Amino acid sequence: MKFGTLDISYDERVLRPRPWTEQQAHWAAQLLTDPAPAGPVLELCAGAGQIGLLTISLQPRPLVCVDRSPMACGFARSNAAAAGLGSLVDVREASLESALAPGERFALVIADPPWVPSDRTGAFPEDPLEAIDGGLDGLDVARACLRTAIPHLLPGAAVLLQLGAEDQAAALAEEFDELVVRETRRCEGGVLVHLTLPSPRSRPLEAGTATHDHLAPSRGSGGRPRDPAARPR
Image (cartoon, rainbow, N blue to C red; front, side, top):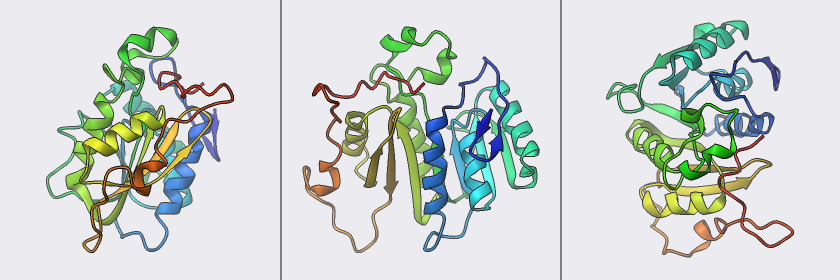
C-alpha cells in the first residue's frame, strides 16, 4: 500500500498501516529540523516501520526500529530496503526493556503503541491482538514506551506519541511529570502528543495550567467524548 511516498508491505499478522498516521511522520520530520539536536531517530512499537521510514525519507537520519514481533521486524527490514533506506535503518526484534544499550541517545522518539482498552479489543477482530491491546486503560504499552524513551533522550529531543483520545494523553501527562506536553493534535483516528524534557530554565507548571488545558477530552457534534477504543480505520 502507499504510505505517503513509500510503498509499504504488510500482511494480516501485523497492524494494517492507517493512512491518517502519515500525519505523525510529517510532524516528526518537522521536529527534526533546526533547532533539533543532531542524532538518530527511535521508533518504538514500529510494526511494519512505515511511520519511521516516512519520517527519515523526509529528513534523513539513522533510524532504530523496535518491535517484539518477528513478522513486523521482517516487514520493517524489507520496507526499508524497498525504500532505499536500508543503510540508515537498524531493526531490532526485542522487548522495549531490552532493545537499547545504556549509552544510546536519540534526537526523536516516535511511538504508536497499542492503545485500545483490553475489554474493547473484540471490536476489532481483523487486527492482531498484540498490536492493539493496551491493557485495562489502554495505556500499559504507552507507559512502557515513555519509560524506555526518557533515559535515552538527547538534550532538546522530542517524543511524538500516538494515542486514542485526549483523556489518555491527560492521564499520561499527570503520571509522567518529568515530561512537558508541548502540543496535542486531534486527528481522524486518534491524537498525536508532542512531549519533551523540560528545559533547564523552565519552571514546572501547576496542574490545570495552559500546558494541559488543551488535553480535555474532545467532543463531537453530539457532545460525547471521543472513544479511546476507536482504533483508527
